[in-house]
Length: 434
Image 1 (spheres, helix red, strand yellow):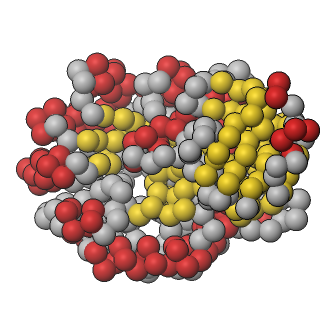
Image 2 (image 1 turned 180 degrees about the vertical axis):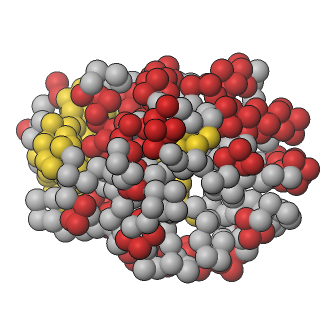
């Protein structure tokens, strides 16, 4: 079947352009990009189905690295079905899922289980990551080769830092020999243990245990030294502190195969949002000072930070209705990723192609995917959205099972209207089908 999307503003992060035009899809592939000057009337005749985009933005679907789906073990928090529906409604066409489940995804059998479950019930693409060490305990590396053959796109112990440097160096060396990507969450684990906020006056006034942003830099410096020694492919999943950026820039300038990401929460929120111990704002690493947030935005615009991710981490009500120090870390963000990111565009901090370079193109490149572009031959994974549509977020209307969002009751701007995966519409806001 041929599908034609007309009267759209096409956002192509690969060329860094946004221009009016139309896109033709045949099967699951983009076959033609038609500039506005060609006109629509000559092209509509050749299409079986036509969608008038009404002058809204059409962009590559979001590729979200670091989504936690709680199967197996904690299905009451999030399942592949609910996460997939939330992703489709949020414009995420590819979820790259984390292995920090119960039990961890550290063997081919567990990986096969999540792959099969995702294929059965999720309306979007799901690419699983596997643990880097067995049980995420940092003692013995997993069978990287077997897991890579079984479909693991990357290897990570998530927020459990591998403290044993020898174990990590061996894992990086082995990953290098197989061309596998290692994803880390840089923190100095001893300093970070038990911390609920970033150290400073605000944390002292609240009487909460805190950690210096230097802990992130220390963890990153160690990792980068090991990457230099082993030559491994490395991605830091969630940098948040300005003090980490010089080390990242030096590593890139030295030609190391290194990229870095930042979560949407660290781009749009700061430590003051914690307010009166609001646990929905407890994330890992903790929210930073406003100067750190601004530094992350500037690094993103400059290309030092490569990827924006949701770091979607569902937590049930019981784990959040606790004193701030004891509450679980994490926030859901599949449906709020795009409208929150559009705050940067509305503020004039970043243009639309650069924003989608971080949301779609760069994560696609890092994982070796063909997505992230609007060009002939690219997969037909697209989102149609209105960046100016205003609404007040009601967390109870989120499609995720867990409702722990820091954006509850906040005024948001930007809504996904349609999500297309492999040439098929998997979400349509007008009919609210997903």
